[in-house]
Length: 294
Image 1 (cartoon, helix red, strand yellow):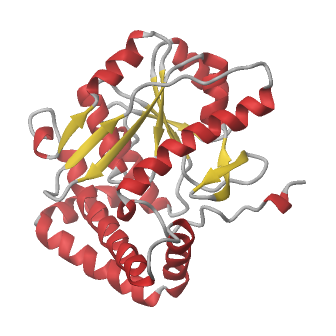
Image 2: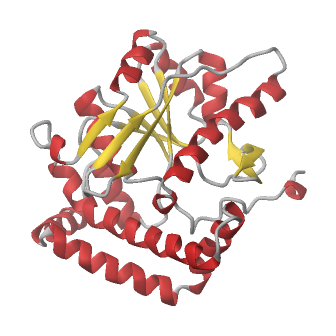
C-alpha cells in the first residue's frame, strides 16, 4: 500500500518531471560537483575511503573515481523523478535483467527471499522494477532525517504495492512474511553501531556490519539473492541478480553469524570493485571501531 504523499511531495515530483531529463541531469551534476568542491568533509571522506580500498591506484585515479562517483549519484538523483513513470510497457527502455533465472530458482523453494541490496548503481530502480518482473517487496527501511525528502522517497518506493518495514524490532514480522514466500529487501552496506553488527572484512578493513539479514537467513532457511542495478555506458541499467545462496549453520551461533555476514559482505565488495564509481564512498562505512565494543 502506497504511503500517502503530501502536497509538497506532489509539487516536487511534478516540477522535477516538467524539466527535461537531460536538463535535470545537467543541473544535478553541476550541483553535485559544486558540493564536491565546497563540502571538504565529504570529499575527504570519499578520497580517504578510496585510497584505503584501492592502495594500488595512484592519487589521480582516486580523484577520478571520486568525481565519477559524485556525477553518478547526481544522475541517480536526477532520475528519481522518472521512477513513478516507469511501467511494464516502458521498463525495457531503462534496464535489462541479467540472471532472472536465479530469482525463479530462489522463489521455487517457497521459503521467501532475502535480498542483499546496496547503495549501488540506481538502487531506487529496484522498488519499481521488482514488482514488474516478480511481485511487490517488503523493504526494511530507516526514515530519513529530512521529513520532506522522506515522504518523497517513501511514496515512490511504495507506489507499486511495496511495503516498508521500520528498521529495528521487525524480526517477527519478517519471519511471518518469509513463511508466506514474500521478498524482503535489506540495504546491507552501511556502518552500524557495535550493538547492531559484527566486524567483517570489507576492502581489507574491519567494518561493523549489520546482522539483520544474516539472523533472518539463519532462522528461516530462506535463500539469499543479491540484486545490483549497475549503470552501463549507454545510460541504461543492467540489473544483476546473483545466484541464490543459503546461510551456513554449524551450531556455533556466534561463529556462524560472523561467517555468513562476511560472505554476504564479500558479494557487495565484488560488485563495487567492478563498478567503483557507483558506490557511496562519501559514507563513513568504517566509522565504528572495535575498541568501541562494550
